[in-house]
Length: 298
Image 1 (cartoon, rainbow, N blue to C red):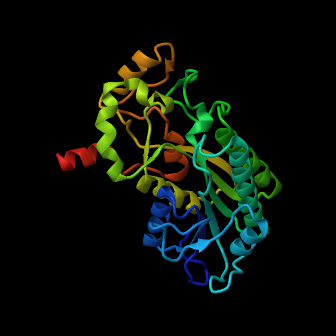
Image 2 (cartoon, rainbow, N blue to C red; image 1 turned 135 degrees about the vertical axis):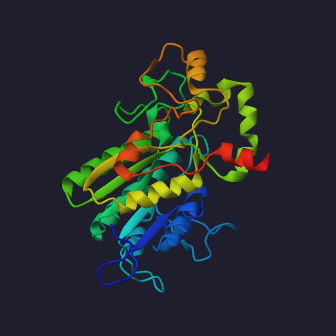
């Protein structure tokens, strides 16, 4: 999908959750690549984009107005939506509040986009649908998108329902392209200082198979998802190419999950959250690693 419309104007994208760690990176990346970005979130935080539009995504009228391009001084056609907003993890608020907020927001955004004729929607799904935390061992490694979702929390259940909803919306409307990105644990460069401490105990990060994603690579995945012009609902795991550990991936599996089938020869620090689908579907390729920051600062 070209960044410019046939009329020559830049394509316009609404980014929800624009004040969050991933959202800020997405807004910056899209603008760097020529998109006209309308950032929205429920509150204006100190690090939020200056032109943030404050929107309550659980209010359908507000969402419809924004995605239809009808807000005063923010008017204009919308070509795509990147929906990143949510209560970001289990246990932050009561389960009922997590479900109500996240499911309502997803419904409002996805159906408002369809009603407004927006044909490209990317949304933040989650690695949690893979079965996190892995108190029950994964079915095989590296894990991928091929096995049935195994939500273990209300937060993860909503992410699973969002994927199912997207599947049916695309069935109802064959012109829609919807991409759910199963993001791993989002990190910024300043977060990498604590990574060496993980080596002392492999159990500290077994909950997500020692995975992570640099926010800048997460933004790359969102952009490439928005550029995808392949009608239908798609999901892809988005993780870094490596793990958070200095130890080899094979040794970690052998110690912590000795009975799990390993389905490929693993690179020394290769991610155990397979990104093969993201590579094939989106042309995604991680460009950032905590090891680079460590080497630079040494």
